[in-house]
Length: 105
Image (cartoon, rainbow, N blue to C red; front, top):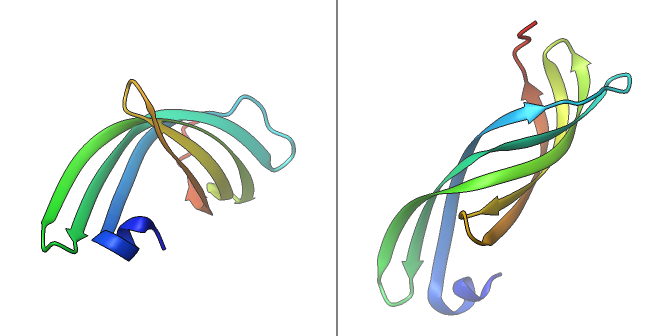
């Protein structure tokens, strides 16, 4: 639990990002990449003092990761992203999952 949950209330974030990816090389089915893009965040805070507020904001994102091709256009993915607001570092995210990619060749 975070301090906000123990003392002040709860906070929930919904995030979505749109990024461009560069895959400089491949080793068999492994495809490492770097990415850059923009992140949208919707943050809802419900404080113990009965104050509730919602805030929307955008941040820049850079990331690194690796895709492992399972079948054509479907990969297992591990990703590490870093967020900034244009001036300051504001956070890190990590994820693992499946990625469906369009083949633009």
